[in-house]
Length: 555
Image (tube, helix red, strand yellow):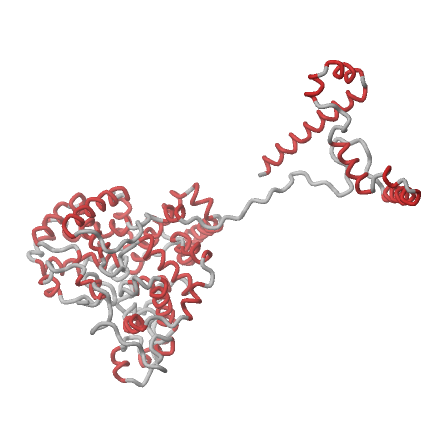
């Protein structure tokens, strides 16, 4: 299938484990960059043959250290067993990276403890009343995501924002079913070879065969079974690894599903056509954001795939400092792919957007090297977030450019082979497309009466047990004397008494009948019982109206 599918994502970035190809080779192949260079990762010589019977390939046991020297050499990393023995003596930063490694960061801006506790309290209130906040106060959620989600609630908030929690509720037991399935051998071997490359300086993935690598294998294998037509893409591994740092495997799987299907649909498909389209969209938007950078890249004839593939497919997880990665992901889950576009535009603008910076970029090699070694200043958390928030790039602009680039694609290359669903821009669009289960409202009376209390408006006193016993004795005597048909049963008598207090008696004529016959109307007006029945009807209607209004107010 050509180059391994996942290798195309290692072109640009200063992440701790980025494995970029040689820049000279990338520049030489600029014109040929495309879907061929992004083909599926099916091993070095095509799909691997199914493992022999008794092999542990593709299982958790195969991740434990073995005696095979070749396999140990291939999967060796910082997380090997010999290096993990001294892991307890190393210091870990607050993100879980080994202090002093490439993944760890220096001095960070600390949030005051009181401010952090206040933010946690606000986020707890939002998460406990999520539907109400999303329906009426979505702008407030967006502002709080821009300020940063508290670390203690980040994993839970990502599940709510992405809709992963709803997916989990709609598919109970699905992940366990996929986890217990054997999986496709052609993907399992490729996934295993990628495990040790994902954040090897993080405490979760430092040890080969540890719980971090095992959970990562489970999540990626489950996705190949959940979407067999897509299979596995190498860029999915760092996405899943970041999720696993904040939530258990099952929740991480459903968040990965939402990213692949709702936020970045088509990014990890066979031909990677979606990422190529977004590369053209990014380049077109750059002309409005930074004409200087756009002109320079056009003059150098540098294809957007050479610098934006890893940025977009890994959501900058292997490019930015870790504190910046988390802030970008907070906004990405809330607002959608426009955050990814904004971050890419900010980096291009500040790396190539001035004549002074272009003096050191006279050719393709120097330009790509400039994008591979971005200045720490422009990637710093506070500066980058502020620039991203203020950059005026909207969903409408992105969708307009998408239609333009799609039309050009169809004119030059024909129809897209990947028919993915339209992407959804952020948490609000996802919630509207897939609303969560809502509890049904059960009507509850607003006025509760004791069992023996009379109905409102009735003048009679509640019957005592002696009265009930006396009625029962009368009924027994009537039954013995053969006059049972003349007396109602105790239950019928009780129902008739209750009905008589609330509703008009049966011998009262309807209003229409009285209007039709004047004689009957005159006789009814002279009858004192008629006036009593009219009062009873009026009282009954007023009582019903008052009860209905009270119930509506309660609901």
